[in-house]
Length: 354
Ligand SMILES: [Fe+2]
Image (tube, rainbow, N blue to C red):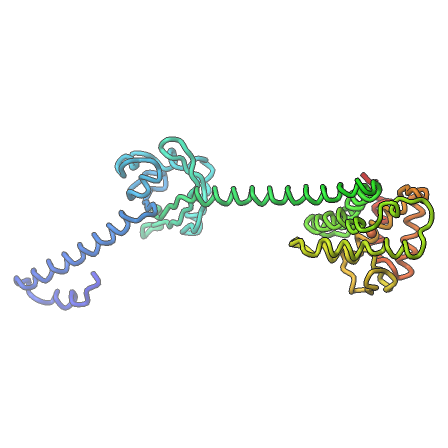
């Protein structure tokens, strides 16, 4: 009774006018209650009230239909614990949470419909206790989120598919170099493996390792502009031939810069022949101007290239290559941390190229 006049009225004798006023108040309250009831009963979201052991005290038509029952009466014959939760564990979790916290907000679980099919639901609820703190019932709302979960699952699958296609495209592009220079394609694969291992050895994430993998698989793609006979010709290259070969870093950047990678792959490729002391190419970048990704790729590139056979020179033993890159780090050309990680991989962790 929220009516402020009621206290005043109680002092009046119970005459007819008084009784009429009381009846009018009662009618107004009944109307209010009915309007709340119809709000709940006609709500498109499922509304319920259950005992802690799962007996349904109240439910609306939306909940009955959501669960696959024609009427609320039919639904009320079922016990939520036995016929609602598809996995018993969820009911236990729900009871624990609602009784400990007094309410649940956005509790997600699996429910079983009348026909046995499963639906994903989201629940908001609260516990109602008596004055002694004993639980009387739970009440709240239930929303069928199966469509949302289905959409999310499809979206995740699409993203997985796009990533798969992307990786296959990168590998195919890298493989395509095989037609021009068999050394380049295998070189890129092996550099990719070492780059990824270096990233992880340096304590960076799998995601970072994947960026390096993509960049490494494509790092020599610019060699497509270099005449094939120059790539595999035995003997030392003339100065102008060497300058032509060096163009591949810039050419690789040109090819990749318009691809909307979500990582700076083109820039890593552009910088993979830069040296910390500024003696590299094509831009002559120095120290911090060179991205960490490019410093890692650079070490992996040198180690793989030098330790592999080429038509113009035999393979250099790995220990000799490691000594060389250590000297290059001391001379301020290569990143000392990357080189240290590289020597650890080969000398202590038994890294071998695939
Ligand atoms: Fe290169």
